[in-house]
Length: 199
Image 1 (cartoon, rainbow, N blue to C red):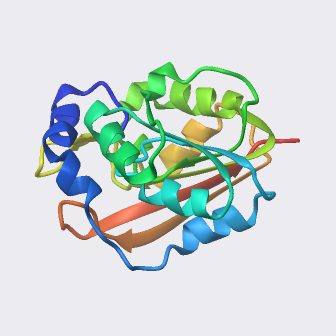
Image 2: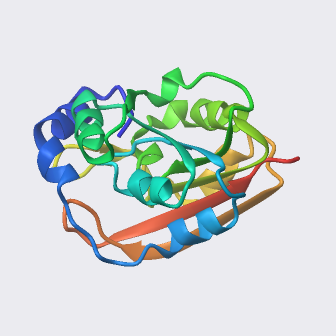
């Protein structure tokens, strides 16, 4: 989770250990496809790494992973799992140019305030190397709001996301809609975005 919304940050601070200790044996086909498209040992920035579960998979596959989260408490939980430092990083503080082969942002950019989302995508675009790949997922909707746990979500539609991503040049942009769930246990429509920066 990476946002300055105090209520969302307070939720992850209070729930950090329970959130990080969730166990899932479900296959991760999107992560598998993402990794399969990268060269061996590629440098991956993970935004909103939560408890570090996805970073652990990527590290085990030999990738050079930089895990980050906007919540200090979640970052500590990820450090406990991964045995390596995890930086506290808010989306608005992403800096650098052409540093990573890929950015993995599963279920985290959905917390970025709507007015700031184009700027966040622009910073992610800049930090990717030419030909770099981004994966991000969002809870779909028609306007920002909060879930029953008090967390802020930007809830975009697919059309809105296309407009947001169009503020930076991408060689390819794919948005897939699918049904799923979340930590709140509610059935949830998701939008899965894969974008590739031009070479």
